[in-house]
Figure 1 (cartoon, one colour):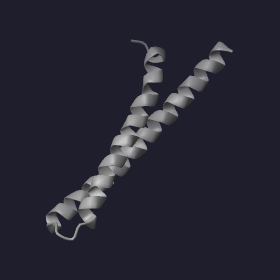
Figure 2 (cartoon, rainbow, N blue to C red):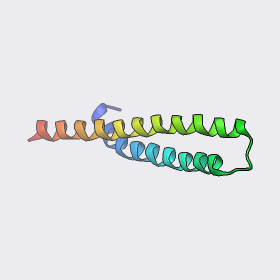
Figure 3 (cartoon, one colour):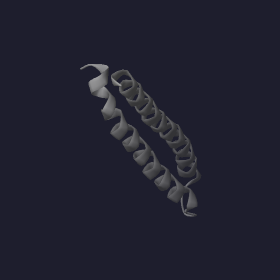
Length: 78
């Protein structure tokens, strides 16, 4: 598959990555907010929340790269 054919698929993948990371971060926040959890669970949730920030950034970069690539293709065709 060439890069042009793969390009538009990056948009949904980036959005899905951001959506999944947001959902996981919400779950982590619930663990941290509960007072009846073990401190190891809180530590694990905080580490996972940080990882979700990185996934969100990666998803945003995917969307940005796809947008830039699409703009370049339009410029080439025009």
